Length: 301
Image 1 (tube, one colour):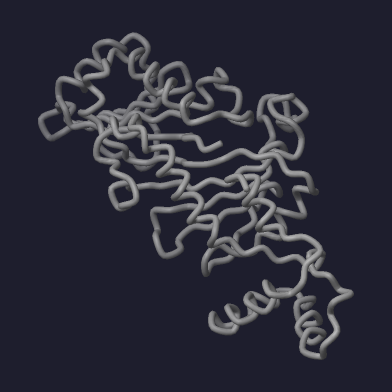
Image 2 (cartoon, rainbow, N blue to C red):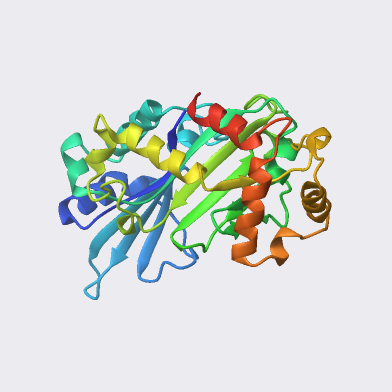
C-alpha cells in the first residue's frame, strides 16, 4: 500500500505567499531556533504543519516552504503506524492546503521539494530477524541506529539526496507514554516499513516534481510503486537461518558457509569479492527467502 509521508512543497508566487501568511497570521507559532534555515522566518501551525518564509534583502517574503505528514495529520498528530493509502494522502494534502487558504487553482504554483515514499507492511516472522538480515542496499551497508534498535538506514550512497529506511514500525516508541506503537494499538504487532526519503526532488527524473498537480494524475501512484519496486531490488538480505544446511555438501559450499560465520565478514571484502559472495549465497538452496517474502508483502505476488 504505497503512500506519501512527510512532504515539503515550495512556491515563489508572491500572491500565494501573501495568502498563506495573511490567512493564518493569528495561528502562527514562531520557531526562532530552527537549525539550517538562515534568512527564513519559521512557524508551526497546530503542531502539525511547518511554514518557512524566506525574507529577501528588502525584508519581503519571496519564497515559502510548507512541510507536513499527511499520515500524521490524519491521526491527529499521534502516529503514522496504521495502513494509509495513496488516495488518503492526497485527500489530506488537498484539505491541508484548503485550510491554509489555498484553492485547487493554486496547486500549480507549487513544486515538490522533498517527499518520503513508503509502505507499512505486516510480517509473519520475527521482525528482528528480518531487520538484522537486511545487510545492504545497493553497495552500501545498512547502519543501525545508535539509540533505536528497531531502525536501520542507508544514506550518502550514490545519490546523496536519497535516504533508505527499513525498520519495525510497531516497535517505535511513543515519546509521551514510553510505550511501543503496537502496545498503544496504533498498529498490529510485527508491522515494518520500507521507505525512501527524497530531498532535492528536482534532482530525480523518475517523476516530474516541478508541479504539485502531478501528484493527482492517474499515473502518479503507479510511478511511485515502480520506483519503490526498483529500489527494493537493490536490497540484500543475509541470514544463515535461511540456508538449508542439509544441502551444504560440497567442500566449496562448506568453506563459504564457514566464512559467513566470521563476524564482520562482509564488511572486510572488496566490492568485487562481495558481489561474487552475494551471488554464491543467493544461488544456495534456502529454507526460506526473506527478500522474496518481503517483496511479495510489499508489492504483491
